[in-house]
Image (cartoon, one colour):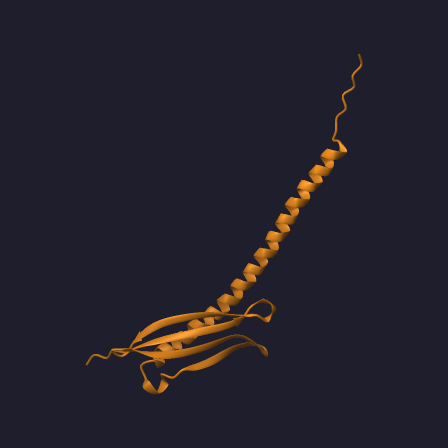
Length: 128
């Protein structure tokens, strides 16, 4: 009896291996695209948050002066395109405390917009 053993892969095994490899590669490509979008969203959000933070610090000083304690709005531009818009409002919290609310609107993908808000209480107590 002469039995020859053949080594190697059958065509079915090769096709299954290619399918498994393709599914894995497609999963990696999808994940990479998702991570790229998340990074871009995070960068836009960080720019808007920084813009709101700078406005809050400027308004913190102005809150204790009645003539400067006014609602307002400002816009951050990159070139001729707007990136973010801050709108701030004051509310009297009593006992010389004022609530400052800043609503930031910024662009996301495909010219959609998103809004985030920040609120704080500013004490204007004077000791004398």
